[in-house]
Length: 248
Picture 1 (tube, rainbow, N blue to C red):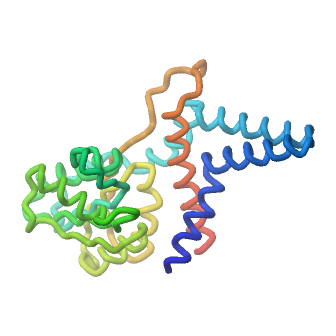
Picture 2 (cartoon, rainbow, N blue to C red):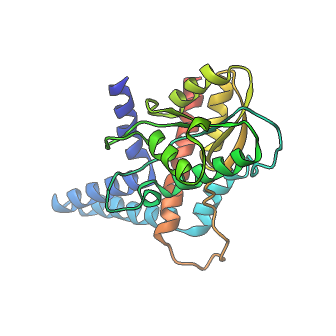
Picture 3 (spheres, helix red, strand yellow):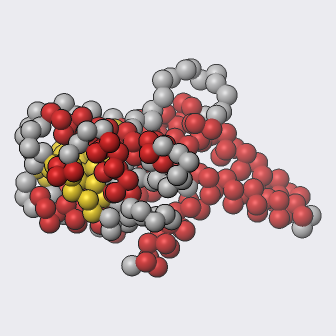
Protein backbone atom coordinates (compact mmCIF):
# COMPACT_ATOMS: atom_id res chain seq x y z
CA UNK A 1 0.00 0.00 0.00
CA UNK A 2 2.80 2.41 0.96
CA UNK A 3 4.80 1.62 -2.18
CA UNK A 4 1.74 2.01 -4.40
CA UNK A 5 0.86 5.34 -2.78
CA UNK A 6 4.32 6.85 -3.26
CA UNK A 7 4.66 5.38 -6.76
CA UNK A 8 1.39 7.08 -7.71
CA UNK A 9 2.72 10.40 -6.37
CA UNK A 10 6.02 9.94 -8.19
CA UNK A 11 4.46 9.16 -11.58
CA UNK A 12 1.86 11.92 -11.30
CA UNK A 13 4.63 14.50 -10.81
CA UNK A 14 5.94 13.94 -14.33
CA UNK A 15 2.55 14.20 -16.07
CA UNK A 16 1.42 17.39 -14.33
CA UNK A 17 2.43 20.88 -15.57
CA UNK A 18 5.28 21.56 -13.13
CA UNK A 19 6.88 18.17 -13.68
CA UNK A 20 6.40 18.25 -17.46
CA UNK A 21 7.93 21.73 -17.86
CA UNK A 22 10.84 20.93 -15.53
CA UNK A 23 11.54 17.62 -17.28
CA UNK A 24 11.53 19.23 -20.73
CA UNK A 25 13.89 21.97 -19.52
CA UNK A 26 16.32 19.47 -17.97
CA UNK A 27 16.35 17.30 -21.09
CA UNK A 28 16.83 20.39 -23.26
CA UNK A 29 19.76 21.61 -21.17
CA UNK A 30 21.32 18.14 -21.20
CA UNK A 31 21.06 17.97 -25.00
CA UNK A 32 22.52 21.47 -25.24
CA UNK A 33 25.46 20.32 -23.09
CA UNK A 34 25.86 17.31 -25.41
CA UNK A 35 25.96 19.78 -28.34
CA UNK A 36 22.80 18.38 -29.96
CA UNK A 37 21.57 21.83 -30.85
CA UNK A 38 18.53 20.91 -32.92
CA UNK A 39 17.05 18.50 -30.39
CA UNK A 40 17.89 20.83 -27.50
CA UNK A 41 16.11 23.71 -29.22
CA UNK A 42 13.00 21.58 -29.68
CA UNK A 43 12.81 20.53 -26.02
CA UNK A 44 13.50 24.04 -24.71
CA UNK A 45 10.89 25.57 -27.00
CA UNK A 46 8.37 22.93 -25.90
CA UNK A 47 9.13 23.72 -22.25
CA UNK A 48 8.70 27.46 -22.81
CA UNK A 49 5.50 26.90 -24.78
CA UNK A 50 3.96 24.71 -22.08
CA UNK A 51 5.04 27.13 -19.36
CA UNK A 52 3.30 29.97 -21.22
CA UNK A 53 0.16 27.95 -21.89
CA UNK A 54 -0.37 26.73 -18.33
CA UNK A 55 0.41 30.20 -16.93
CA UNK A 56 -1.99 31.91 -19.36
CA UNK A 57 -5.13 32.90 -17.45
CA UNK A 58 -7.76 32.17 -20.16
CA UNK A 59 -6.38 28.63 -20.50
CA UNK A 60 -6.13 27.97 -16.76
CA UNK A 61 -9.68 29.32 -16.36
CA UNK A 62 -10.87 26.95 -19.09
CA UNK A 63 -9.34 23.97 -17.28
CA UNK A 64 -10.85 24.96 -13.92
CA UNK A 65 -14.26 25.94 -15.32
CA UNK A 66 -14.94 22.50 -16.78
CA UNK A 67 -14.43 20.99 -13.32
CA UNK A 68 -15.94 23.65 -11.06
CA UNK A 69 -19.19 24.16 -12.90
CA UNK A 70 -20.26 20.53 -12.55
CA UNK A 71 -21.51 21.12 -9.00
CA UNK A 72 -22.93 24.48 -7.83
CA UNK A 73 -22.36 25.90 -4.37
CA UNK A 74 -24.31 24.21 -1.58
CA UNK A 75 -27.80 25.64 -1.11
CA UNK A 76 -29.72 22.57 0.11
CA UNK A 77 -31.49 22.65 3.46
CA UNK A 78 -31.66 18.87 3.77
CA UNK A 79 -31.15 17.60 7.30
CA UNK A 80 -28.21 15.20 7.49
CA UNK A 81 -26.18 13.71 10.30
CA UNK A 82 -22.70 13.96 8.82
CA UNK A 83 -20.69 16.63 7.03
CA UNK A 84 -17.45 15.16 5.68
CA UNK A 85 -14.66 17.69 5.10
CA UNK A 86 -11.87 16.12 3.05
CA UNK A 87 -8.27 16.69 4.05
CA UNK A 88 -5.63 18.90 2.45
CA UNK A 89 -2.07 19.97 3.19
CA UNK A 90 -0.63 21.58 6.34
CA UNK A 91 2.56 22.32 8.21
CA UNK A 92 3.35 22.46 11.94
CA UNK A 93 5.60 25.52 12.14
CA UNK A 94 5.07 26.85 15.71
CA UNK A 95 6.01 30.35 14.54
CA UNK A 96 2.82 30.48 12.45
CA UNK A 97 -0.76 30.84 13.69
CA UNK A 98 -3.03 27.84 13.20
CA UNK A 99 -4.82 29.48 10.27
CA UNK A 100 -1.51 29.75 8.39
CA UNK A 101 -0.36 26.21 9.20
CA UNK A 102 -3.33 24.82 7.26
CA UNK A 103 -3.26 25.21 3.47
CA UNK A 104 -5.44 27.85 1.85
CA UNK A 105 -7.63 25.15 0.32
CA UNK A 106 -7.87 23.39 3.67
CA UNK A 107 -8.99 26.54 5.51
CA UNK A 108 -11.73 27.16 2.94
CA UNK A 109 -12.94 23.57 3.21
CA UNK A 110 -13.10 23.79 7.00
CA UNK A 111 -14.92 27.12 6.91
CA UNK A 112 -17.50 25.80 4.46
CA UNK A 113 -18.02 22.72 6.61
CA UNK A 114 -18.53 24.87 9.73
CA UNK A 115 -20.98 27.20 7.99
CA UNK A 116 -23.09 24.24 6.88
CA UNK A 117 -22.77 22.59 10.31
CA UNK A 118 -24.18 25.73 11.93
CA UNK A 119 -27.26 25.47 9.68
CA UNK A 120 -28.03 21.84 10.52
CA UNK A 121 -28.88 21.12 14.13
CA UNK A 122 -27.42 17.89 15.47
CA UNK A 123 -24.96 17.43 12.60
CA UNK A 124 -21.39 16.23 13.07
CA UNK A 125 -18.26 17.24 11.21
CA UNK A 126 -15.98 14.48 9.93
CA UNK A 127 -12.33 15.41 9.39
CA UNK A 128 -10.01 12.94 7.65
CA UNK A 129 -6.40 13.05 6.49
CA UNK A 130 -3.00 11.66 7.50
CA UNK A 131 0.04 13.49 8.85
CA UNK A 132 2.06 13.74 5.63
CA UNK A 133 5.59 14.88 6.47
CA UNK A 134 4.60 16.22 9.89
CA UNK A 135 3.93 14.67 13.31
CA UNK A 136 0.22 15.50 13.47
CA UNK A 137 -2.59 14.46 11.16
CA UNK A 138 -4.36 16.87 8.83
CA UNK A 139 -7.63 15.68 10.33
CA UNK A 140 -6.52 16.87 13.77
CA UNK A 141 -5.28 20.20 12.39
CA UNK A 142 -8.61 20.88 10.69
CA UNK A 143 -10.50 19.82 13.80
CA UNK A 144 -8.40 22.21 15.90
CA UNK A 145 -9.34 25.06 13.59
CA UNK A 146 -13.02 24.14 13.81
CA UNK A 147 -12.85 24.04 17.62
CA UNK A 148 -11.07 27.41 17.66
CA UNK A 149 -13.97 28.78 15.60
CA UNK A 150 -16.59 27.58 18.06
CA UNK A 151 -17.44 24.00 17.12
CA UNK A 152 -17.81 21.71 20.14
CA UNK A 153 -15.37 18.75 20.31
CA UNK A 154 -18.26 16.30 20.70
CA UNK A 155 -19.61 17.47 17.34
CA UNK A 156 -16.43 16.37 15.57
CA UNK A 157 -15.23 12.97 14.33
CA UNK A 158 -11.50 12.66 13.56
CA UNK A 159 -9.94 9.95 11.41
CA UNK A 160 -6.15 10.45 11.00
CA UNK A 161 -5.31 7.45 8.79
CA UNK A 162 -6.60 8.07 5.23
CA UNK A 163 -3.89 9.03 2.72
CA UNK A 164 -6.17 9.66 -0.25
CA UNK A 165 -9.80 10.25 -1.22
CA UNK A 166 -10.62 6.57 -1.53
CA UNK A 167 -9.49 5.83 2.02
CA UNK A 168 -11.50 8.82 3.23
CA UNK A 169 -14.57 7.50 1.44
CA UNK A 170 -14.16 4.03 2.95
CA UNK A 171 -14.07 5.52 6.43
CA UNK A 172 -17.29 7.45 5.88
CA UNK A 173 -18.94 4.37 4.40
CA UNK A 174 -18.63 2.71 7.80
CA UNK A 175 -20.38 5.68 9.43
CA UNK A 176 -23.01 6.85 6.98
CA UNK A 177 -23.84 3.55 5.26
CA UNK A 178 -26.92 4.33 3.10
CA UNK A 179 -27.63 7.72 4.67
CA UNK A 180 -27.06 10.89 2.63
CA UNK A 181 -24.31 13.18 3.93
CA UNK A 182 -22.68 16.42 2.84
CA UNK A 183 -19.30 16.22 1.16
CA UNK A 184 -17.05 19.28 1.36
CA UNK A 185 -13.96 19.58 -0.81
CA UNK A 186 -12.39 21.93 -3.35
CA UNK A 187 -14.55 22.65 -6.38
CA UNK A 188 -11.94 21.25 -8.79
CA UNK A 189 -11.72 18.05 -6.76
CA UNK A 190 -15.48 17.63 -6.36
CA UNK A 191 -16.22 15.76 -9.66
CA UNK A 192 -13.61 13.09 -8.92
CA UNK A 193 -14.60 12.84 -5.26
CA UNK A 194 -18.31 12.49 -6.06
CA UNK A 195 -17.62 9.79 -8.63
CA UNK A 196 -15.49 7.84 -6.16
CA UNK A 197 -17.96 8.14 -3.25
CA UNK A 198 -20.89 7.16 -5.49
CA UNK A 199 -18.97 4.16 -6.83
CA UNK A 200 -18.77 2.83 -3.27
CA UNK A 201 -22.54 3.01 -2.87
CA UNK A 202 -22.50 6.21 -0.82
CA UNK A 203 -24.91 9.12 -1.19
CA UNK A 204 -22.93 12.36 -0.94
CA UNK A 205 -24.44 15.83 -1.37
CA UNK A 206 -21.87 18.13 -2.98
CA UNK A 207 -20.77 21.28 -1.14
CA UNK A 208 -17.84 22.63 -3.17
CA UNK A 209 -15.49 25.26 -1.78
CA UNK A 210 -12.14 26.82 -2.71
CA UNK A 211 -13.09 27.85 -6.27
CA UNK A 212 -10.00 28.82 -8.28
CA UNK A 213 -11.51 30.07 -11.55
CA UNK A 214 -10.48 33.71 -11.77
CA UNK A 215 -12.38 36.69 -13.15
CA UNK A 216 -11.85 36.87 -16.93
CA UNK A 217 -9.52 39.79 -17.75
CA UNK A 218 -9.43 39.43 -21.53
CA UNK A 219 -7.04 37.57 -23.79
CA UNK A 220 -4.29 40.19 -23.77
CA UNK A 221 -2.88 39.28 -20.37
CA UNK A 222 0.61 38.24 -19.34
CA UNK A 223 1.22 34.76 -17.93
CA UNK A 224 1.36 34.61 -14.13
CA UNK A 225 2.15 32.08 -11.42
CA UNK A 226 -1.36 32.05 -9.95
CA UNK A 227 -2.69 30.82 -13.28
CA UNK A 228 0.07 28.22 -13.49
CA UNK A 229 -0.82 26.93 -10.01
CA UNK A 230 -4.50 26.77 -11.01
CA UNK A 231 -3.58 24.76 -14.10
CA UNK A 232 -1.48 22.44 -11.93
CA UNK A 233 -4.45 21.72 -9.67
CA UNK A 234 -6.87 21.23 -12.56
CA UNK A 235 -4.59 18.90 -14.51
CA UNK A 236 -4.05 16.88 -11.33
CA UNK A 237 -7.80 16.30 -11.18
CA UNK A 238 -8.12 15.44 -14.88
CA UNK A 239 -5.37 12.86 -14.48
CA UNK A 240 -7.15 11.42 -11.43
CA UNK A 241 -10.43 11.19 -13.36
CA UNK A 242 -8.69 9.54 -16.32
CA UNK A 243 -6.94 7.05 -14.02
CA UNK A 244 -10.21 6.09 -12.35
CA UNK A 245 -11.78 5.48 -15.76
CA UNK A 246 -8.86 3.29 -16.80
CA UNK A 247 -9.17 1.25 -13.60
CA UNK A 248 -12.93 0.88 -14.11
